Amino acid sequence: MCGIAGIIGNKASQTQLDAMLQAQTHRGPDDTGRYIEDGVALGHNRLAIIDLSSEANQPFFSQDKRYIIVFNGEIYNYIELKEELAAAYSFTTHSDTEVLLAAYQKWGEACLSKLNGMFAFAIWDTQEQYLFAARDRFGVKPFYYTIVHDTFYFASEIKSLFAAGISKSPNESVWANYFAFGSYGMPEETFWEGIQQLPGGHSLTLNTSLPEIQKWYHFEEEVKKYKTALSFEEVKSQYLQLLDHSIQLRFRADVPIGFNVSGGLDSSALLALVNRLDDGENIEAFTFYTGDDRYDELPWVKGLISHTKNPLTKVKLKVDDLASLAETMSAQQDEPYGGVPTVAYGELFKEARSKGVKVLLDGQGMDEQWAGYDYYTKNSNSVIQGVSKSPFRTSVLAEEFFAKAKKPTYPTPFDDRVLNLQYRDLFYTKIPRALRFNDRVSMQSSTELREPFLDYRLVEFAFAQPLAYKIHEGIQKYVLRSIVSEYLSDTITYAPKRPLQTPQREWLAEDLKDWVSETLDVFKEHPWFEYEKLKEEWDAYINGDQDSSFHIWQWVNTSLLVSSLRH
Image (cartoon, rainbow, N blue to C red):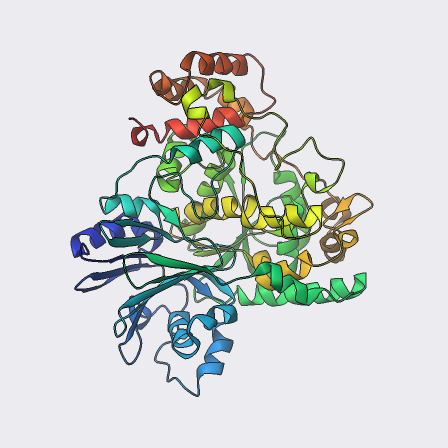
């Protein structure tokens, strides 16, 4: 995993490119590379994971020098692709970067469907003078871009675009939707005016100053190939085979690998499955805790580890450190993020890196493919996207600003309520939001995060199964629970989802009360808020109205970016 940056157009300069690369140097501290010619500047921050030699540094040239690639991510099936390409291509490195470029040379854009991995890359064709870029199916790896004065800029992080001198102006409609509906934007949007992201499963071609965007991953069509009726036991068997292969692929690395673990089913399942591999029980696990027994999952984690015998590193998040850490995380994220758990994960990755672990595995993606959220059941209309009813406080918003909010609507390509909810969560809400948080959190400490459960084969296969295999007699993620019941105790296998992992509600109202008050003071003259009404809500919160802390965190999140929001 790395960072990529580029400028295509008359304004391209090494000075701008260097500033962009410096802004995201945490993404790749092992090497910084550049390619500069008239009107083209490509840069790369390398975090060496596969083939640690300098021969694998980027920008990487094809052997005929026609193509130049900058690539962020991993192509997990690069060994198989390399064997397929060997007859037509003489490889000089052991890197997946060279395999990716060779695949593009042979198959063009069609190579994308052959890739199993997480990726965002850009290839410059020096002969035809055009740029081709693409992002993986679910958008695990980021690709941000903007156009200024007929010049195209792209980077792995928004801050790199700002470093190039791009104006930092808020996209007020996205911010308004965030406050009114909790939306983090549509797949092509960001919180900043003029800065867009290439959606997951899409590609981009730049022949002139205007890019052409195309959807290359058609999930709706892909799931149809799994529609043959299988028995429950056949589904379990086939899914377990896919799980095993997905995990094996994601253990391809030339550096140490660990994994994040909580007391929940998904990460516990991942740990149990990892331990089915050779030497799996020697892989180190990392978990965070806060010291608050009401929320900590540490007792469940210890119970799990006592069963699997993996070495465990416990990372404690201290409330006294939270204000400083939250401010640092805000600068890293560039946009609003999810709260105290995100900060806690930041400390976890920092600890892993200090111990020499450069790659961690995570259990993201099971709830979305196996209908694991409460609102997938028909009798759970009181829960919307995992938060309590009425978590927003639109009364504090200025009338003119609130008028810019428009409730997001999402495609419904399936004739099934639950499938459409799963589709929304996979491509528009839950997964895009989590992947953005996770990418920034891991890269902050120059570590790579891999999500075995988001292998596209797993997601497609699970998505296509009948609802009775997903939810059985009120038990959600039923196939997964049935599989891991052979490896885990019933206490973990059938444990209910615990929605809260930290005492965020209490910390904001008590230990961090003075800090929150100070951060909210910046809104006294801000045109987005009616400050007196906001103050009333804050007073009510610290006096006990704490059913939800989401609105408080929204305001704190925004205040930490306030220097960018002043008009």
